[in-house]
Figure 1 (tube, helix red, strand yellow):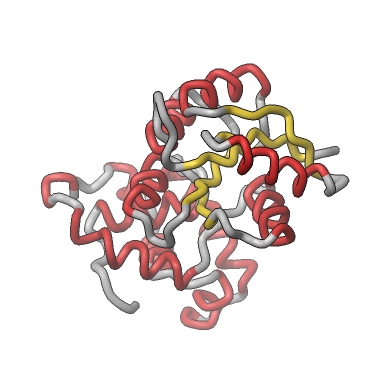
Figure 2: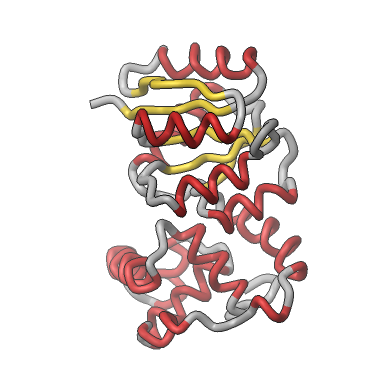
Length: 221
């Protein structure tokens, strides 16, 4: 069964290029194209894609606000933000809005296809090193007033809280397992429990929440 993809970008050349790349893969199907954020929301509601490739800068409605509105409305689609610049300030806002990761527009065809598969499977598309750099850069911009501790954190066990901090530090499941001297399967179970209890879509959202709640500070773990 093919992964259904919606492409949202205001440049027709970019859309057609991505379409050519994706339709060359048997397991990927482009179900629609949008040229602005408002159209992306409408088409996502109509077409029910599995993944939305969302350009950050678009007319009428930008990709950040489109992502926020789409996911707030209950869409099951996973959003991958497309950006021209690594660590664009809009990327962090998009992750806070619920995006599952981001890609640079000059991504290699094979990487683009694999990224869509990863996100469609429920994983987050953000390398640990990128997580660190991104959040180290932007965590300081979070206002102190925003650092209210979500009440859901009280539902976490001490071990789950510890794992949340390590996720926020950019550690992979394997690295967390090594640090805590447990199996990777055990870590995956804890991560799933953390996401469920905090009502989060994926580990990207867990990272953002941990920083906003002041559980971790910028810098190495």
